[in-house]
Image (tube, rainbow, N blue to C red; front, side, top):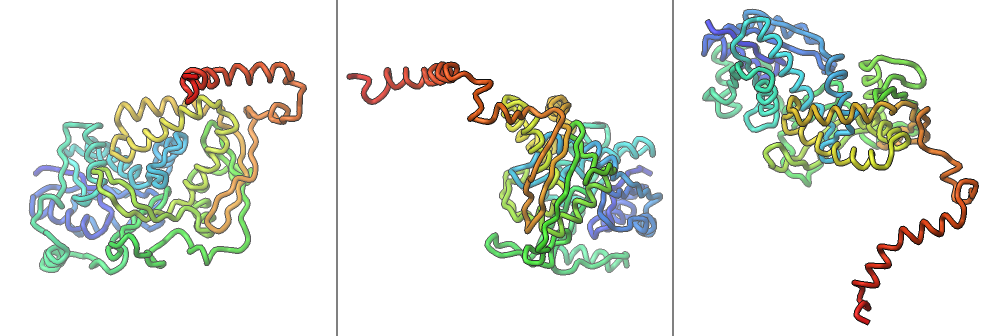
Length: 401
């Protein structure tokens, strides 16, 4: 009997996929359920998997690995896809793929399986990541193989076999949540002019429900990694959870955007990303104090490319790894503290300090002539403007005269 490992999160499709693999295709199925910060109790998923036909079930906590090896490297790279997507869903798929490959090797599986939608980005991310780690593993995707064309077909399949399912309800089709935020998929909001229902959001308050009193916080970084909150050292999981709570209370990180999916299709997306929104704002501000102009200019271009690679499925690609090496080097001196105010959906930087600061108030003060001689300034201005004056003389509208 062939053996496979299935990524199992307990949703409707994954339940059907498990039963279909075990009973329609004759696989011995091992399931893997991963805690990435969904804030739900996952242990019952093991019992459910066994009830649906799995030979064994694993439920593991990988929150620390998720932040350390995926989310924080993206933070250090200032990577945000098209200005609004903090890549939480994509990063989760890469960790899932990594764990699937690990367990497949341990359990002697020749294939891995998933129940990602056949129209979405996730199937590509998962399968690209799996292939990059172990090209010998076959990927099974029941949603692309079974003859269940719509929701009614799937419900009839489950009812006839008396499977333990929760029939999908109205409202959001799915809530994809982890420590790095929430992606909401809404079935009844097809018109981009239509406002999403207020009850759809799970992490952030509506703007008119936020406190009238601002929250003031201080985040400390060491080599680009957040390590303290309000001058108290804190582990990464607690820090991110607390920032999600605080940011959510003040409607930080809620977005409704139209972005380009992996296949180039325009898609309306709803995100809630309080913690990464706050951390990116603080991190970029600290970088502006300790990095040179040339490094900042180079970083901005490479951050954009890095985000595109992550969004498109290339986490394990050599280009992403090479870019990571650049960002790791650029973060050596990104150490210090940033003071922020959270208020009515906005994150405002109120102050920053660093032992590696390149800012010198004496140099920045235009009235301070201690370091600048007037004649030096005159000579510099003359040299700097020389190309412009030469171009105007030779190529300007009056050059023929």
